Image 1 (cartoon, helix red, strand yellow):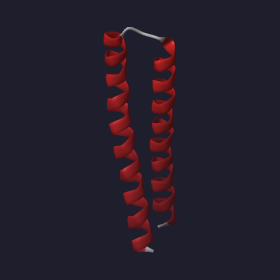
Image 2: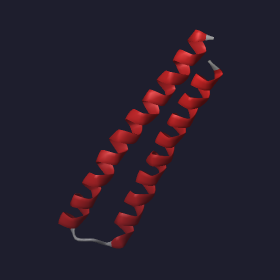
Image 3: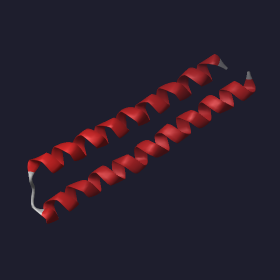
Image 4: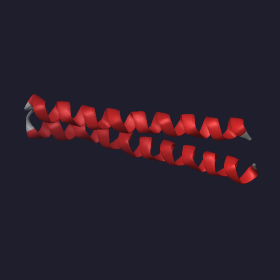
Length: 71
């Protein structure tokens, strides 16, 4: 079951890395001084990736909890 815990931790880490990427991406967009319509269009990409990253992190934490329960 240790493998299950470590696999879940790795999945959660990937989700957190994607969340950090979203933050950096949005900060760069805001500093770029883009037109409002272009900024909104590019922010939609960040929102989709943000939700996916949250889902991946949640699934990873669920795998960790299952691994702990099965130990």
